[in-house]
Length: 258
Image 1 (cartoon, one colour):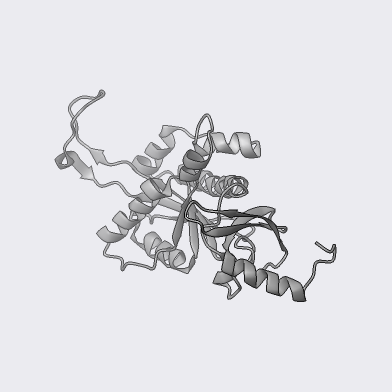
Image 2 (image 1 turned 30 degrees about the vertical axis):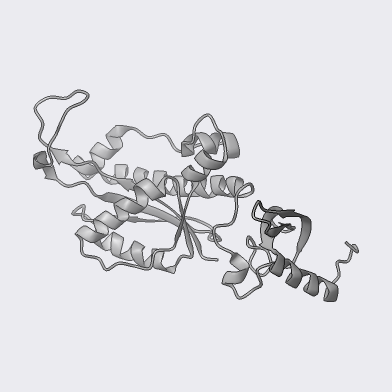
């Protein structure tokens, strides 16, 4: 399983406006410098440390996006927090504007959507989830860092931005691992690597699994609850897959006799 964790940091538009305040209508004609992506932090699941790509000295994000879309094409899954509505649309939009060829997109796993649909936290922000699930949230930043990067091209501000982005990626993986224990697999890791459907979808090729119980859907379709003993996560398989599991188990009995 090539699972990639990623996060982007973006710049605001620079434009002209006559007054500030809420509910102002500012036309795109007022934009004098288009927004862009400042940096992209990423980390392969089993890598020791995150990496970060940045826009160039002219604040052009084309070369960075060319590199990152090639990285994306290598992934089976990509994990973002709010990636479905923010990070991925941003990446696609900027790539399109630069006429970067489309890439084979991996499956997207959005931890924000997981948190909203499967849990009931006081907040679904990554900072909060990091605090309550891992003991620490994101690095604290100020709006001035963005201004120093965009208007002053400040090297120290950019270095701070890179550290902030890398920390977000590490925190994202930590939060993902906690949420994943209570969530279904997005990709069947064993089948991806040539295994059987009854094998663990969470740990590629793992046969260290056991049958929990059977149940029947409203349509009368039998299903079976299984547990992966390596990851301690559950999953469902069909009656046919369960039959194949039983056939394999007869030839490979558990040492504990179960």
